[in-house]
Image (cartoon, rainbow, N blue to C red; front, side, top):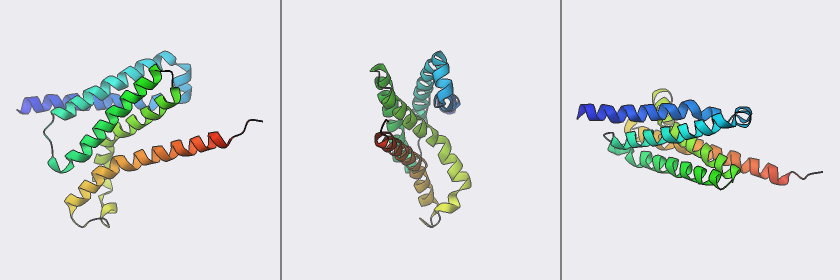
Length: 167
């Protein structure tokens, strides 16, 4: 029904908005290190918002052409969030940080794809003449490229740390 669809949409948007509002502040070292309690509470808010967004999304009517990409992104988002929670509980801060960054990138996908579809579809014209095919490309690229960039960043950061020899 229309009312039920509105509920799932509102849940998805509310959860996603919470994730997008608290997420960026989690990555600012000065905020994270100085305000530990805020960081922990915001982390719980991020997790709760993620659950709300995912449950709300699952309740929405689906567009079959993008379902696979969206479900893969959702599963990876939840997996990264769960790995991050497990890592911090085990005291592995670096693994926690990396998986939270991945979870945030995947959460941002749902906003990124709308921006890409609205403003940069012309860039995908060389990939396909058909608009439906371009939309499918944009759906995958909106989360794959940012996720790959995060992985490249972590790899470069790791190499720089390993190659640095203390005096």
